Image 1 (tube, rainbow over the protein chains, first blue to last red):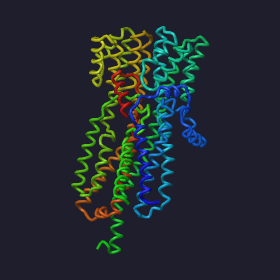
Image 2: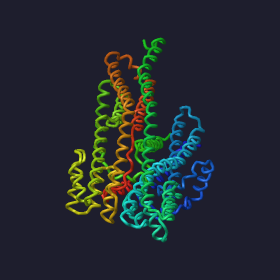
Image 3: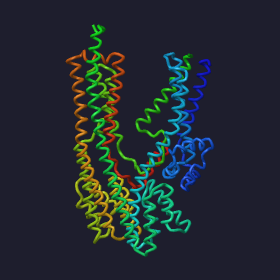
Image 4: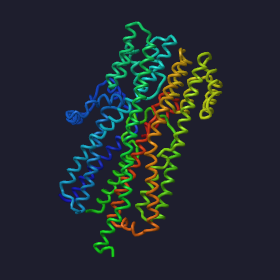
Length: 294
Length: 293
């Protein structure tokens, strides 16, 4: 194949990747139907057939079984996520292909099979990268959601002690806060109001949808307190304290773990410093022995 | 190969590199909603500029001393990574003092709420506030007295204090002023206790990390001193870094060095618990960031 055809093909792949990337990054408000489907737990129902097939293949490896819950938690449109995966795969694969193709055409010993192989590896990495990012973001969001739940319960308890009914107290407490966790809580309370149900029921559903066991436990506590006729404020206070203590404990554990890990890069720094000083001496001696330095 | 095609390829490769660099610098190429949530706009631009200026000065000084472009680049990048990020005893103490002042303010407020209305309790807490938050507490008192709008004043105060525990206190006072409530003091005391526990944990963690921070500083200092010393006392020992192999080795060692420092700094960070009560102004900034990213 002539270099002109190669160049055309490479240019087409790269430009389509970059155009797609630019299009994906354009500023826009979230899609209502996407948000609704995410909140209602519709998973990837809006994904295209090709994306869904590839995702199913990846799911067979057990990698992305929690992804619909992660997307629902982060309120990311599943179709947008699928689109990002394709664009990242295309962009990353094309970029590696181009890099290797230029080296191949430069006749510096890179074999002909290297560009397509590198493109495939790059595309695979690019396809999985958005999932990895979503998973990390979802882990952080779950921790933040747990903290928001603790604050929410504390606020609701104060209102119930002031004489407010449980459902309005929970709704008003949810409306007081901002951020992802409180937005989910507000939606759950609004759903309960709209469907004339108990907030504990919609909280339980929310906990199941976004994989947050704390919410399911809170719902259980509220339900059992209502069934037993005990004051809800006591149950809320206990649960709020438990959530905050658990987060406190987790913070300490994480910080201790990270402190212990700090010894690894610190030791490496010393090793690198020694290498920096020793290497010129070692190579300088070699040059002198061969006579090149004379 | 056609020079035009080579040029186009070069431009595209550069675009890819820029995108990767952009990503490595921590910018969100593929923004997710969580990336802009729970994060009202905060300061920090000034520090970034200081770091850039310090990095440029370090690069120029390094080039002036060692006369090696790669040394200069690595010195500049290292300075940018380290400047103001390695933490200091003074800064940790200042942060802890601020946290303790917040705890004292919360406890005074809780005590006053037992027998006074909210506005009186806010005034009393402002009167006995520690110096670290006296100004903010007095501003809150003035806002409440002048506007009478407790929820809005509390939101502004929460924005100023930037603490999740203050958020909780501000939210409960805002809610209580709107709907009424009881045993508010108990909730505030519980938050004060949680804030105290966290302060103690952070002080303990900072103490445990101090040895590693000192080690990093020592290695950095010794590297600088040795490089300058070799340059003036044994020029020949650094000449090998002028060869192609030397450049490559220096690039690898320097990159790993910077990577290790960055990793230490990253491991030493203890992110604060996410905030949940802030003013509409702060939320608007967040929304704008989300759209523009």
